[in-house]
Length: 558
Ligand SMILES: [Zn+2]
Image (tube, rainbow, N blue to C red; front, side, top):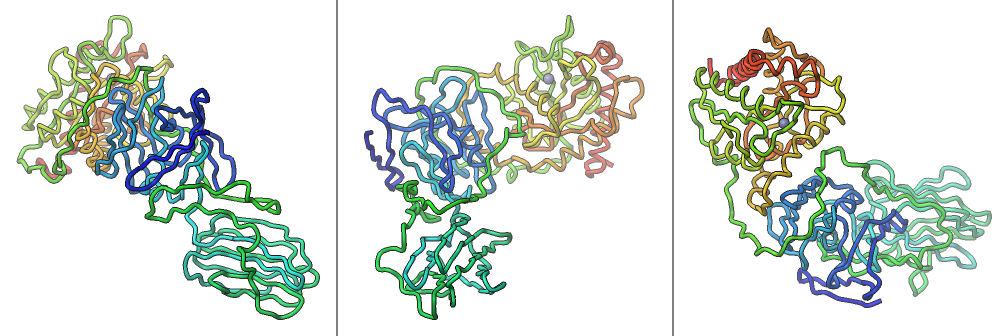
């Protein structure tokens, strides 16, 4: 083993990496001393990389991958980071930050330097202590009370606790043999059950309860005539003995003290993880409260296998004003109508019918009606040309659109799937089917040029979720109006036709936005209807009426 120390972030991070010829293939997860599996890893130039998706899930954070922009977004409450291959520059909570090595793409995986998960901001966000040693992540609860060991003497037995703050407690003797100590406000390093088996203490059990409370429960041994719980030399000590006496702590640390990670809430990445060799053999059970995420519910476009691109100079990140703040009030509602797909991207195809043609036809009719109705209207395309998804939201934002309406036609392997649906964007999909529809529409990203646009990503994350409520309202109005529009002949399920899913095209739009799936091109029934120009015009009319009703309700028109 070759030990490498790297100077990092003005802190010191020591990575223990195997030498040449022993390529690191996985990194283990040791959570509160327990093996919690591993993630795939690799080494490059002495830097340990881990699979970003698997690792983020192990930590219980959200993770989205964007194949074409080669970006990953890791998010959890109050924290997000945007990583871009092949750059070392990342964004954390809108602030630029540089890793010691660039993010890589390997096969279908995005690999990031392990140091990312040691960043103080990340540790704080996941509310854990994280350290890295000997090819493993060590993850610990952020604790302020830790069992540090037992001290077995001739006339008494001591249970010793280290506290990281002044800790309140209350003792109670439940019966002849059972004593509890309740700590109303602590976080234990870990739960512990230990059979001490001395004449004074038979066993002890300490665990984290609800609302920040922890309870120590001690079963006294047969010769215990007296017990006490006191603060002694800055340590909390439970003593049970043959007679009343003050606890006397040995000069050396009591028993075998487990080595704690050194990081504090605001500290630099920890140097060492706790040593497993120091685990006490008397420990029978431990609980750690660690969450291992199941497959994330959000749609995650699969990254295509590609060779890492050559290094590009880091983009300059300019301070951009918040898009929400620069919105100017205009009298007429501005609507961006977005016919899905186009040009080299046909969308769903069945026989001679192509989604892109129907989308364009309905969008044009919708735009015509809206203009006639007094709205200001633009279209992302008004002919058969290819427009990248990111370009569509950009156009809408340049237009300062108040609404964004994307027109699509659905498709499914299930030929009996049919009906009209309206989607609005949210991180989580209504159900598996909604997620599949989003995955289908997001596939259009494969036609996009690779771009590394930090500013875009930044603005997108700012605008995120601002408009979910308005979008769901708009979706409801459009659904109802299409339902009432005569002569369409495509099912509108009242319970199930307004849905949410993670559509890339709606992601960057700084306004309420919906995506309409007019029907299923894969359903012979829907296809028969949509192939009819009159039906398409009626669909446009229905969508139009829904938008008008929404605009009235929102006070744009009388
Ligand atoms: Zn589509």
